[in-house]
Structures are given as structure tokens and as C-alpha cells.
Image (cartoon, rainbow over all chains, first blue to last red; front, side, top):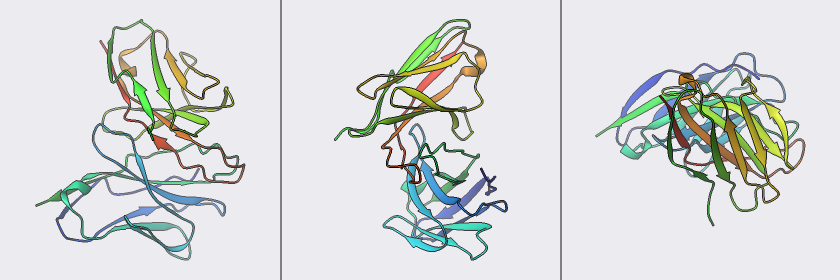
Length: 112
Length: 116
């Protein structure tokens, strides 16, 4: 599975847009990019997944350039409740078993 | 509809003891995965069960073993506990939808294990 690199921590303020970039230079053709969110004392929660270009759901947007060597998770107008750790995962889901490989993630702190 | 549930919530053991953690998957799910999360780190994959068999395993010693029951619930057993086994143990469930499909995993709240 491709290795990912993302910032250890980020700070933002309520109402701002937050963009977290993940580098995955060795991404393979069959790999998808998935982002998870984890609040303290809780298990991770799926946010969004994409393969190329842009994906948007009710929570976030995911931007993937043509070379797919990086991706950016965009959180619009964050609130205090968005304070969490955000994980970028890259993997080929063939085989159906979906072994998730997490890195250290990005700790986002949203301030009033 | 209940999500993934785990028991117990917290557990304190001493070195050398054995522990069993339990997980009930989300309704309709048939696959259970276990992860270990040390403080300040991301979850690390231990193993995954489907159709009562271990299908994939991460880089964990044989002291870590598991089981899946016919009702899809699962147990994680750790023998000869070490101080380094102190962590949050997470269970995730999913529905197997095919060999080339991404099967979204839903995580439980975890069991906090402290080894003294």
C-alpha cells in the first residue's frame, strides 16, 4: 500500500475553510484515496473517498490532481466540533478485505 | 439501528495475564476487523475475520488471536500481556460486497486496555 505524508497538526478558527493536503507519491493505478476523521475516545469515521478529480459530499470535498500524487481534503466553514485527527489512506481494495493502513494523521484544532 | 458495540469499555490487567475483548458488528455486517491504537498514533491493523475465518493479518505476534462466531460477533484474545499492549483496541465491521468493492468499515468506540 502506498505510503502517505500529511502535516502533523494544523490550527484554524471557526468559520474558516481548512485544507489538509496528503502526499502519496507512490500511489498505484488501482489505489483509491480515503479520508477518516477521529474524535478523542472514539473510533475513526469515514469522511470521503475518491479516485481522481473532485468529490464532494455533505461533509467535505476531496481534490485530486491529474497525477494523483497528492490529495487535499477541504472542510468548509469549520466549527469547534471539527477538532479531530484526520487520516489520509491510500489503498487498493481488490480482494474485498480492505485492510486499512493508518498513518499518524493530522491533528486539527479549531479555535473560537 | 445499533452501530458497532464493544465491551468492556475499559480494562486493567497486569503483565502476563490474558484478556478477551468483544465486538458486535453493525446490523447486517458480516466482516469484523480489529485494530490497536497506541496513544498519539494511528490505528494499526491486527486481523480481519470473514465467514468465521481469519482472512488477513497485520504484523502482530501469535499472542494476538481472534474468533468470529456464527452471528458475526468477534473476540480478540491477547495472551501473556506486555506493558506495550496498553492501547485502545478498535473493532470495525463491514459488509463484504465483492472482491473488487470498497467495503466501508464502521468503527466502534473501542476498549481501553491498560497493562500494569
